[in-house]
Length: 105
Image (tube, rainbow, N blue to C red):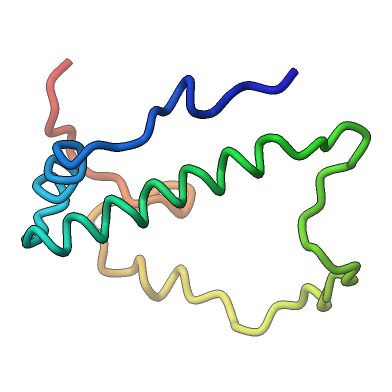
C-alpha cells in the first residue's frame, strides 16, 4: 500500500520556514527564507519519490555493499586495577562503590 506523502505532509509555507528558523535559533533574511523553503520542499518531494519505490521482496541491508565484518580476537590488554582504584573509597562491596542514600523514598 502506497501512502501519498503530500496528503500527510503538505508542502511548507513561508510561515513554516519562519517557525523552523525561530525554533532552530537561525536568523534568515527574506531571500534566505525563500531559498530554504525551496530546499525543504524539494527534500519532501524526494522523500515522496522514494516512498513510491516498490520494495516488496527486498531484504533490509546494513550496508549497500556486501562487506564482511572485521572481527578481532577478544583479549585482555590491561591488568585489573580495581583494588588499587577502590582502596581510598570509604565503602566498597563486591567491587561497587557504596554511597549514602541522598534521595528519600
